[in-house]
Image 1 (tube, each protein chain N blue to C red):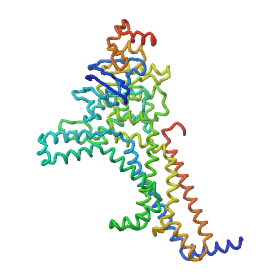
Image 2 (cartoon, chains in turn red, orange; image 1 turned 120 degrees about the horizontal axis):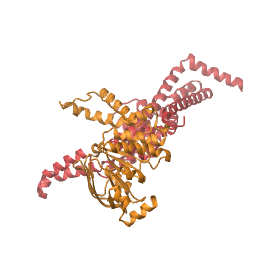
Image 3 (spheres, each protein chain N blue to C red; image 1 turned 30 degrees about the horizontal axis):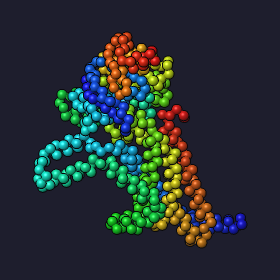
Image 4 (cartoon, each protein chain N blue to C red; image 1 turned 90 degrees about the horizontal axis):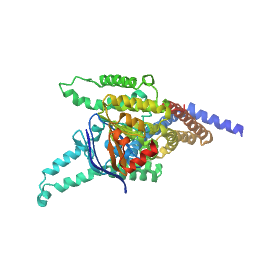
Amino acid sequence: MLTDFSLKWDKFIINFIDKGGYKQVLTGLEHTITVAVLGLIIGMVIGIVIAIISVMPKYPVLPYKMQRVYDRFLSKFPKNPALRIITLYYVFFAIMWVLQRIPVILQKICSLYVALFRGTPVMVQLLLGYFVLFPSMGIKITAVQASIIIFGLNSGAYVSEIMRGGINSVDVGQLEAARAVGFSYSSSMIKIVVPQAVKNILPTLGNEFIALIKETSIIGYAGALDLVYAFKQIGTSTYEYTVPYIVLSVIYIALVVIITAALKIMERWLAKSDRRN
Amino acid sequence: MIDVIELHKSFGKNEVLKGITTTISEGEKVVIIGASGSGKSTFLRCLNCMEDPTSGSIIFEGEDIANIHVDINRHREKIGMVFQQFNLFNNKTVLDNVMLAPYCLGKKKLKALKKDPAYNGPKTAKELKAVCREDAIRLLKRVGLEEKADAYPSTLSGGQKQRVAIARALAMNPKVMLFDEPTSALDPEMVGEVLELMKELAKEGMTMVIVTHEMGFAKEVATRVIFIDGGKIAEEGTPEEFFGAPKCPALKDFLSKVL
């Protein structure tokens, strides 16, 4: 058994170092990390935007500047219904009706987005995106770029729900205090509420990142060279998979351990305004 | 300064304010008292549209701020508010808490201001920041918390937090200050320091509207006391006649309980 393993190990070393397999592994590592990191960044941006939209007050109201334009415009239209049709009064009215309901409409769009991306496996999204949607739209991108976009969109759906919980966990008094000194809703959210929310959800977000880095192991199906793909090739060339797959697992474990440590440091750094440190 | 006309506020089917009409003039110190659930806090929160009134108007500087199409943020800068739970920004230091609003909101106005030839204030964001910082330190000195400038709110005591909150409200140079039970969440020994600060403010002529249970403070500082019962002003008057010879039976009952 042991001699058997050392034989396999020698085979792996020959392939990995002498035949240059490590170059592919390095590229694979790079792609895995790029997809996971950029995916998470895109996901966080999308997630924060969706979360803010979903906690926005829902009553129909135009921003005050638009309302003035609206009032001035409407007062200039004739009162006669026939003339109103000709002067596109109703078209204008309909546009304004939609604009007034932008929060509600955005919320509907966002919940559809979340339902779509949480409802399908990320592999299906990747295959559909890379082989069907992007080519049909005439977009020419590499498999890695497609993976970044798909993973970003996918994790955006998950992060938005995490983020919504985070925003709800911040005391409503924080928002009130920011509004009371004259900040608008959006700047109060961005300056005061979201930073505190991000701090609260950091452990969960770390979880998402760890899940993401492992989920990227499927990008090989779109032809992207990632860690799994690289080690598979090493295995294929010798028909010997034991060692490559063990080494692959060790690399994933190492990645996750590093991320965990980095998150701990970040958490401590962000907790400087906390009492418990 | 603030004219409140027929103010109504309902939460769903629960009508909290049932038509309040009053005027708060410049320099006045109005103390609002009432049993819990009578609507006194809601009334105060309606004054800067923290709660949007269901109907009625609130005329501040000639504009009806109860109208949702008015730019409320511009008016809120001139109406300071101090909360029961302090609500300091937990992710900012004490100094940042005080200077955040003047700096960030001032930066936005800078562009428009620079076009005005008569304007001779700070011209760049950097200069503005220095000015705001100076102002903030001056205010912190005034509330006696200069040495806490770089501390985070979580390390302060309740009384200190409330003093920082007052400094934060003052940083915008408000025309009127609203106090929503500023001492109710404090330990008894810290109530004094906050009330002392509020008395100083009152002496300097700040217009103040205060919801409180501190009757001694009301007697000493108020120029007018309003008793709210069942969403309406049941009685109002100077502290002497208000506490000396209450007319309304609900007020007599209330005073017998709290005094």
